[in-house]
Image 1: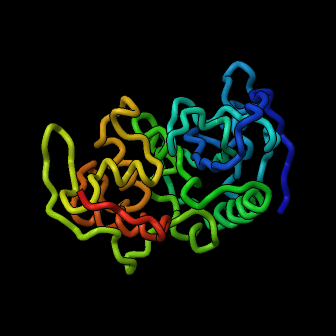
Image 2: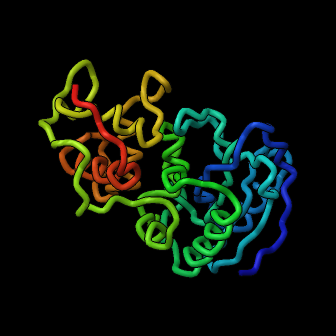
Length: 254
């Protein structure tokens, strides 16, 4: 695995109390790789990542892993609001939704898998804390997007993807709507509680609507239909995800 040094000035020290226990994946969302690299290394831009992976698999290192890169912005995951403080950020060169979103080529994903496996060997990052930018900032971001192969990464031991053969952690109940919220219904947890248990920020802990969070979940785990509605398939996938991520957790009936 070849890594080219392309340092960015946009970083600072991590808080002493913060473990490096998250990995956040992005796409660059710019027309060309060179434009993205230039921006990530521009002191005036005040953005950066630890690494960028070009479409041919070339890896660029911008910020040492022990330093805090500035990639997540206003974000939330698993009760953490300073995601940058605890995470390593990787950018994947892709024009994104604004400039002509395209699939991620095999060479790029192979390089990502190799890089991420090395990062996981160096840092204690649990599978449910390997996330996309859209997971931690669902009201602002859609990257790495619905074409990103999360299942392929999970098969390589990076992150988590629900096995639809796994039993849901609760009996499926009829979906009901009330007071602008979507609930899974008793017995079990509400959709909001289930999403929060995996790590998503949900109201009132965050100021973005629940529909944004459901949409972010769908973009990652049910990309064929992203509508922000917790339908039966979404609930089934969410239940299977929680059963995979937290197999020992017992959900209390209400």
